[in-house]
Image (tube, rainbow, N blue to C red; front, top):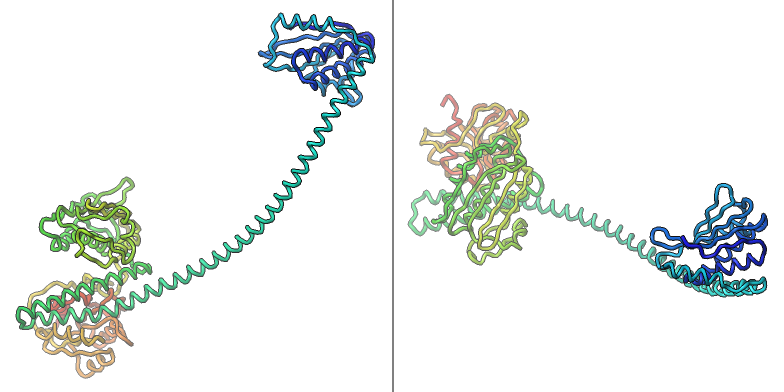
Length: 596
């Protein structure tokens, strides 16, 4: 701390000298004109208030604190000063507004004004001493000179204020113009936003309408596929059956080959029809999922036996053991998914291997994987293989073609089972298809399929005796068999299957004709089509059993097993696509009445 000026105020002349000294010190320290006027005015206001009560001791000094320099003026009046009041009245309240800080002692007889000079001001001892000498050697000041200086300060402040007011008016005008443009832009944006919102609302309404139309179209498509597929199955089944009968007839070599071509072509067409129907059922959510504990080892053995004949020479079919993997799901649907994946794998694999594995992941889900070393799929086309009717171009095996329905059906079926199906492949590197299913524990809620008649495995529900459909050895005559089918061609096929096994075969092409024949004379067995106009096969069987409770019966259909009333009793169900002479004869012989 270094003292620059020490004096005593006793009159107005000394006050004028103090004001001038304060301004000069600020100028020597490099402060601007505003800072000079502020400190000089603060000293003047505070000194004038102090003189009212007597002489005032004044000391101007520099001080350093935390690396910065500050200018301080300490006034010691003879009596305490008034610390509150209107700043316009001058005194200590006015001084507070002009400097950085004002400290007043508790007794009001010591006041310190402080102006912060900042870190940029550097004062060494020599500079401070020179500053002190300059202040003490300053010229004497009279009232007139001080008045001139104050007037000059006032005029300068007035000019600066006028410039600031002009600048403020200009800025206000610019701000008003900016506000006007902003308001106009806001109004425009609001109008555009309202128009856009109206368009969005209209678009959502249109999208909702389109969605409903699309849903209706999709339902119509699914309905069409189901109906057309069913209508196509009947004549295709008839073609297959008639070809089977022709194959049993005396034919030469060329005729035998031609009949085989007919059967193969019809079988391919039936496969396509089945895929269409399965996909339509999956899309419509009409797949009935019947969960049950699955013996994966037995299922894998079954798949191995089915796929092995399709495998090319030189390709190894590897079905890994499924020990330790428990799964509760729909066995038939899972078998379809895996059979589809394995069939695709062997179709596009000419060398190497096709492998089926079963494991569990970290959360206990069953993971079934089909890997092959075949031609593979380009990575950018893997996602498209699950779209209906999409076939990825196969340059390595252009002769291998499909329907483009198998993989979409497999994915939808996996999702219906509560799981997922994903693919990973690269061209020339083979493919990997992974089915992930929840590995649920078996519970008492797991029940058999909700079908009153026999299932596809030939068993009868509701406690009825099972009616398996094995290939039986030749047996005694079946007696009189009544065949009822509105498809005349397939009715002829069934009659042809039975001509060597039954003593008499009657064919009716509608249920009313069948009931009339039974009134003329009872039959020893009946083979009934499920889907017929008027009275369906299940209802017809109930009526037949009303008069002949123990008559052996076979229900046949191009679709799934029917729901049959309890009063219809036990029966065997055979799909038309898989019916042949041995399976039909075995199904009837297995139900022969005890009295025969």
